[in-house]
Amino acid sequence: MARSTPTVPSAADQGLIRKAMAAPYLERDEEHALALRWRDHKDQQALHRLTTAHMRLVISIAAKFRNYGLPMSDLIQEGNIGLMQAAARFDPDREVRFSTYAIWWIRAQVQDYVLRNWSIVRTGTTTAQKSLFFNLRRLRTMLNDGTGSRMSPESRETIAANLNVRPIDVETMETRLSFADASLNASLVDDGEDSSEWIDNLADDAPLPDDIAIDTIDTAERHKWLKTALSTLNDREREIISARKLVDDSQTLEAIGETLGISKERVRQIEARALEKLKAALVHGAGGDPAARGLLP
Image 1 (cartoon, rainbow, N blue to C red):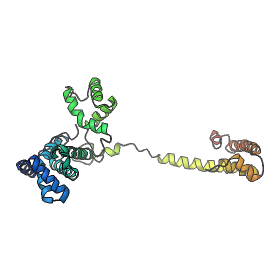
Image 2 (tube, rainbow, N blue to C red; image 1 turned 120 degrees about the vertical axis):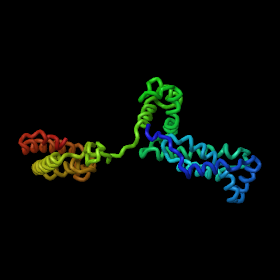
Image 3 (tube, helix red, strand yellow; image 1 turned 30 degrees about the vertical axis):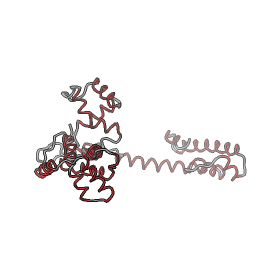
């Protein structure tokens, strides 16, 4: 699994954890009073006591996401942001314990951080994909299908039904979680010597120089054929063909007829005759080259 190695708390993290665990619990009445002081008077000391007492909750939630390989200190920091968001929105009049309310904000903030930083490729963008990302390993373990490199079709079907997603979504997420990010600038062979990189093996979709040269020559030749063929038309035919076939915003038969003072049907007849003359001139001028037939419809 990509980035699946649990992170080990640093000495600083361990100190923070010990300090958080030593913070005294708040009784319901004391918690309610602190929340009122913060909400009504913006008492920073009340906010500090309220959040400090719940730091153990932040650490507990952050620790559940250690298996994603992200620094524990970052997980705790993101949890703190969620804790502060909860404090800013908490309504003590609802008679709900602050921890009950804050746990949602803390978990949501940590999950969002994991999704943003687990991979350089955005992994979960919908609610279903996020649920699949965070529950796939747990459900696979529950099904005792964690021994092989790939899940069985039956396990995919079961997980898909459990999370209300398609089996193909389960398979896609399974594949995504099975591979870590890799740099395209990494060497193909790590032997300490200069060697080609992975990016050197990517196919280039750009045209080859020979193709570009051939296309340039062919385009110039076709333009010459078309210019010669147009010279065989009279002024009215050339004007109609130009307005109908040689501009991006072509005019309607009716509009051209109004300009020339003739009927729409007469314009259509002149256009048809001019196209036949052009095709004959193009094929003749190109020496019978079939490519000339594709210059005009």
